[in-house]
Length: 228
Image 1: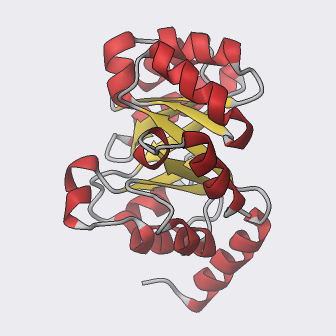
Image 2: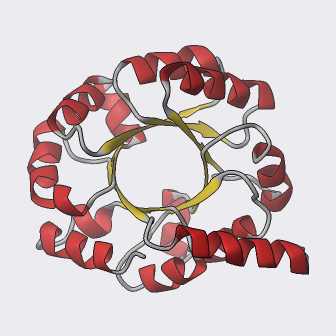
């Protein structure tokens, strides 16, 4: 349970994040040409391009290279969900041009530390994905000491149909972290983004709400306008 001091710290961190929130667009189901077409429409509103896990499985690091070359002003995140061989795998991802790589929060600390070492070598960033972490507050407190840049609460795709959303977990995360910045993913859409913004997160990840919209550019613009 968060203490009064931890809640005050969370409030302070939320204020520090004002005007610095980034919209991250998750590219999961599109191919490379489809991703370029979408990004050409929405690039002005996006702070981070995510090459999603299915995209990485299908295409490897090719979309990371292509998207970073085409949009050098936007950070590219490779959602590799590293779980072992942290330094080795992260080094390959950073060498391909990714600015940020993901590692799973359920991984051993040694794996996360390896990813951090690679990030320090390349001058890049690490996001820890807390998907399926059972004791969020305790594990986030541990990970927060490992030198990572972001800790991300994530409602899994396979349970989003149940109505689950990451807001409660985001609140819990913000109550315990002191060093890393928070991120949030999983079913974020226009109807829920205001409450997430109010809670506070450095990076807000949106996928299908943009890519499946009738007018992706208008949707991305509207979502970005809600950020602080």
